[in-house]
Length: 508
Image (cartoon, rainbow, N blue to C red; front, side):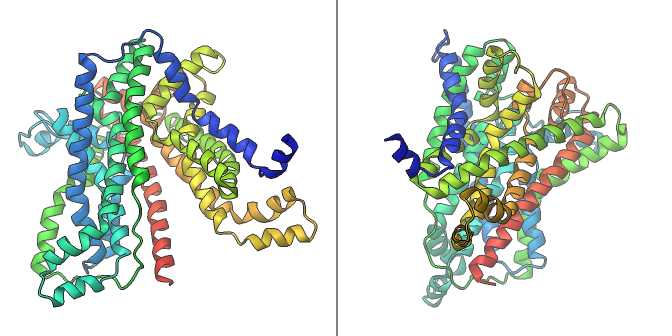
């Protein structure tokens, strides 16, 4: 019986199953930890739950209100430098939201940078309204990009028909176009919800008691069991959002001729006036604040070791993630069981960094040789970002012509030799892209690094956090600018992928 199963299962299955089981270990750890005298729910939990849900709902509504009009403009309006506008409007995605929260917190309010620079007394940005503003500014591109992709896949013939029947262009967009891209809007909104639920830095800087902030407080107070219980409650909400996301289906319409709008000069000016504040607050202000701090205090307090630590740990995580992604991706292509294993590895990506950190801290306490080591930190990065590498390797491997491997086998190559000489070289591009994405995400990761980093091991993200806590805001300039630069590279990778997809659709 076992021999029969061994012949039936592809060679990649055993290793893929092992990796998939490893990916769900943190949840098992949290369940065991939470059962150790933690309170299931109390009045404080209710306030935390309310804050978390309000922040999520307000952020989703704000992101849809900004992202959908911008998607219509960037997809259909004929503007000069269209590609540049798309990059600029998607650029907030390149900046970690905790950097935006940090700079907006420092710029506004009495004695803030704006008052020092211009003498204007500005209201403070904090609390739930401040957190909503920051999260909206840095997550609306999710809605804009998914909606734009749906818009570009539509055939404009229905809009032209509505126009010939006397409907205005605004009514045509509202009644004909938007209902057909509702799934794209929903997909973006659910990504915004996930991003908001998992973010730690923004609620912490804005002093809003959401799950992520309270989990970190409990961890620092050695309340590991209560932190685990809160983590599980957060995971329930994350699981619900992931379930809704899995139910959202893509647009099945056949692509046709794109709709083209030719706005007048007045309409172009109106677009610029309406959306300039978004760009100024999300991009210009953080860079300006970092520039002022750099000019005022120079590189005082910054050690190049922080950048090396970030790069070193992220490189190791990228390398390990790609190695583990290869069997998982090939198992997913091989059959249904492999696709189930692949889905299990995606669970880690839905787990917020603060939750992953809580689980692995407990693992480290049980295995002292792992506690506060670089190995445990790299493991956290790998479990969090493995799906990025799996997706990239899988999409490249699926594009291979299977006849090449069959030809190699007919010529006498063993399965391993065919993999090493045919499959591996042809999927190297996907491996490099996946490694780059894991590297960039690991560079930005804050809560897991704070909880799991070795003693004295400062990265760019943790150094930025330390100077915020100490109130030495000026010293955040160099790490902040370096993180923005690295994140911009990730955005460039993503937009280049979108460009390739456009070419595939249009057949150019």
